[in-house]
Image 1 (cartoon, helix red, strand yellow):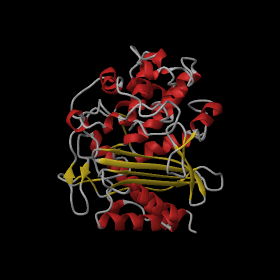
Image 2 (spheres, rainbow, N blue to C red; image 1 turned 45 degrees about the vertical axis):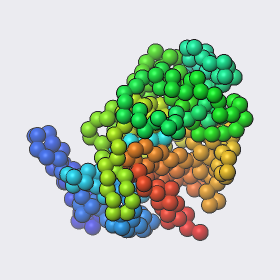
Image 3 (tube, rainbow, N blue to C red; image 1 turned 30 degrees about the vertical axis):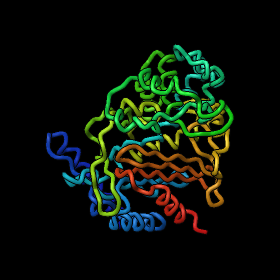
Image 4 (tube, helix red, strand yellow; image 1 turned 180 degrees about the horizontal axis):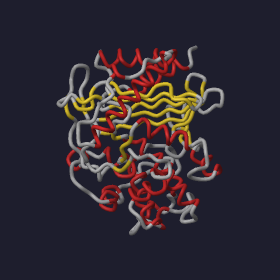
Length: 371
């Protein structure tokens, strides 16, 4: 038997044992690093980098790296639950923060494909008691952060209300009567509020909850079985904060607040299914996909433009689409290299909100695309 065949047999045996024990009510067998097959080439170099960052306290989480349709690495590092000594794995679920926004944007495009709305529709068609200052705001403005609606997560009272359950109209009420921070369409300013309004529009036009619409129209068709709306439920990695050597459990927030701006959880492997689907017309037509990845507006003080839930631009000579996420206890990043000769994806999900995921993605990219 060859070495590769031997390794494959060992891994298959461990998987079968795990399934058998779980079916009989026994403990699930976790694939520890020692049980995973050895890596070679760039994957081995990336793994050494991530193990080093984990050892010095810079990283905890999961990483998936793929190139040209092939997964090079998909592994967990550090602990998902430090009290119970549970390791992170490629199947560990994390709150993904603002990576949620690209799913909200896709839901809007699906509704346009279904003929239920258009991105150029005025927001006031869907929002009751719409303020006068919102009369010029379109769905398009919300998608690209040019509405001028202030970001409610920047309000001084955010830290006192973030643990309180809410509903979409109640959240919208926090900022609906606030003055715009600039005239609609004048510039770009990141606004979680705008994406919360998009979530409400999705519910009004679909007749379903935001959660149900995404599940039926995105997650189930793509078989993203480990992705969904977070309800402060068990089964996710615990979220931590703190710097090197500090592991403090993050403050509690009620996930009804983050909603369509930051309310989802996922795994690196499910997000790779999402990434691959975006090269196809499985969810919407190519014409609508092009809208998502069109550089609609330049982000101030940046080399990037903003599409629908994606930041677009050159990164060290390569055209990329990416987005970061931050939510109490978690920080995340997905970056896609879109040029045909570069095609690659790097996904980093961390269960500590002080992890520098941007730098980690850059370090991984340096292995894939050495200068």
